[in-house]
Image 1 (cartoon, rainbow, N blue to C red):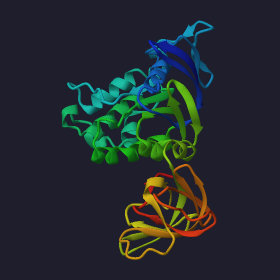
Image 2 (spheres, one colour; image 1 turned 90 degrees about the vertical axis):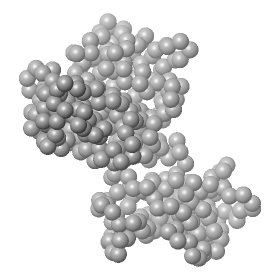
Image 3 (cartoon, rainbow, N blue to C red; image 1 turned 180 degrees about the vertical axis):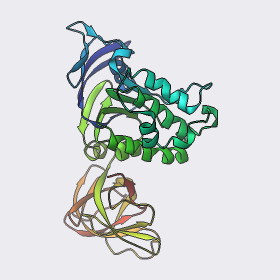
Image 4 (cartoon, helix red, strand yellow; image 1 turned 120 degrees about the vertical axis):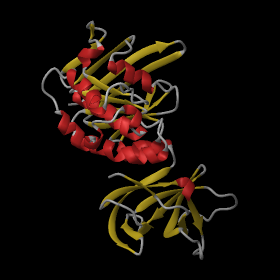
Length: 335
């Protein structure tokens, strides 16, 4: 079941004119503040009626201004999770979850199923005041799922959390993505979150869709860098050895999956014409300077393209062998 969105709306001087498809999985709405991300989500939820447009989930039309169809929010069955969890403080976790179940009107997942999916079993008797920020957001997600939604709308759900709490909840978002078959719209300013969670990215700017595709396609365009597939070959002495199209890379050993994606930003790559020595923590890959485009160098390392910022001073000619120096370890994304 996919979500189809086509909207036109004016808010003062702001003009929204956006259309996209959101298949099952996580479709991230990405872009600068004021791009129209929350306006789109509110229109899908039924909290805002656009000037024109059509919204359809599967075979159900939620909105068609031309045909006079505009389902109220409670009939759209959209689970909405905000930046703050918005739990009822006088109810415990079990009661907050069952509040969502009341809206399902029969059918849908059971409390035990959602509690298992989101790891809430040990929290059921706690009040919201006794929860961490990540735990509260998991409860908010569970409440939305128990309402048997056609789709989920997540508007900056991690924005209010510190890095530790984000790290705590991200695996649960991944589990939600992998085990549900409904469209999920996910609004975020964080390229790192989106690269890890999204299956589709829609980039918005000034009310218009400027790009849509996979995370690597859209994010590589939005912020210079590349995303490489990687396979874990071995772990030894606290170091993980990875095979990538650019050549073998090593990372500090952590809880790494067998396959993953690595994000290598242009700002983390330097070039050297002779093999660098004594660079503690840096990875050096044999490469060739393929092209210079503006302030970006295109480097060919193995079978992969790497990007690097143009340094001051003269450059070697294209076709010259160089060394690509990764000054910080690549960022591991979920595969």
